[in-house]
Length: 241
Figure 1 (cartoon, helix red, strand yellow):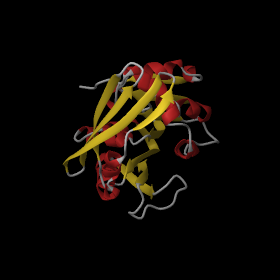
Figure 2 (tube, helix red, strand yellow):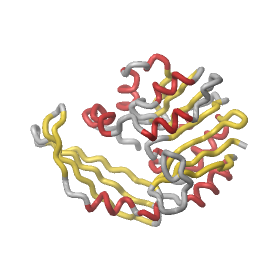
Figure 3 (cartoon, helix red, strand yellow):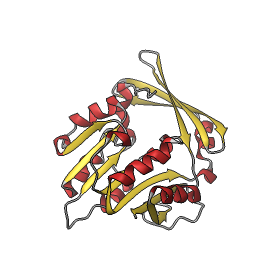
Figure 4 (cartoon, one colour):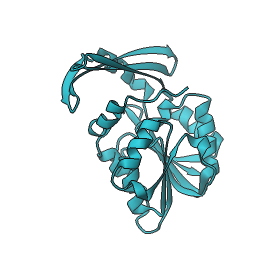
């Protein structure tokens, strides 16, 4: 069962995850010469989604979080987007020309739901549709660095906020991330727990192929440097075949 986010954390989300090189990359995939149907799966607060509407005939933003979708519907430019609370199975109409999953959304979808998600997306894809997403490189073991970081305190609109995290490697490629946020003014602790799946480039390529996508590029950064196995992120571009 999906557990929704604390509304205060949703309000702070854009400041913690601002528009930047990753969004520039995803926007660059939209054709400047023709109108497209674009799907943003796992759109969160919609910070990127609304900007994609400048390049498209239709943009659809989908997220399972009621709090995230509610926030997205209130932001400037929201009327240019169709918002859906749900996941890939919530969509019935296809013919998307570009589909993106940003913010490491792929890692938040465990098996076997990941395979189902890819198959759902293939059914929604037009001929030659591009699917683009990023996922952390498991060989860099990012979760070990997260757990080693000391708690930090910052000022927010809700007063001082102290944050830290704990991780546990449950199985190969499976990491439980527990994030703690203590609102000092109320002495209130908010805990969020998520299961992250770390898949290597070969496995992702094989899973994409099984769903009907051919991987055309794997980048190691937002400047399109080819992935060589050492970078912390893998950015996939795949075409519906």
